[in-house]
Length: 102
Image (cartoon, rainbow, N blue to C red; front, side, top):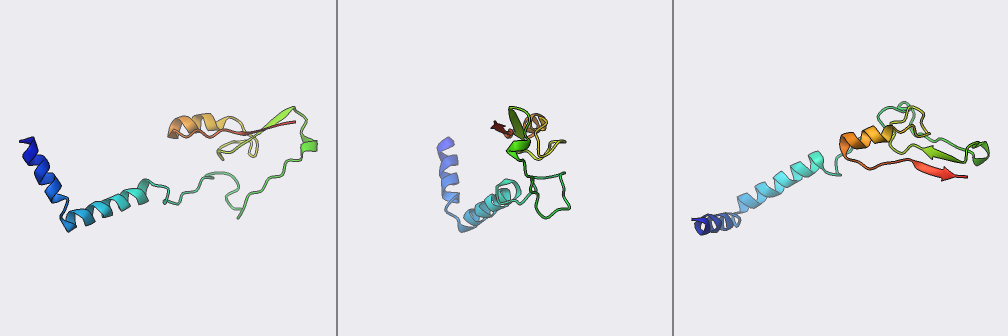
């Protein structure tokens, strides 16, 4: 029984229509879920500005280190407030801050 099923399956793969439908289905999935989809990383910070640039002068740093946000979810942006922890849990990402030591 299984040999007949596999023989029919492999024979069906040679059909041009099956090949075209499979390729189109793969493209649809890739566009919906893949890296080709364009989404905004920054969802909340200075959205009205065309480009966000924050300058931190080392002379102004009073602590031994600073942590800069890379997840775009910090309420203290550009500084990290730990928001990446909840974000990582929600989506499976592994983003963390940039840590600058004096």
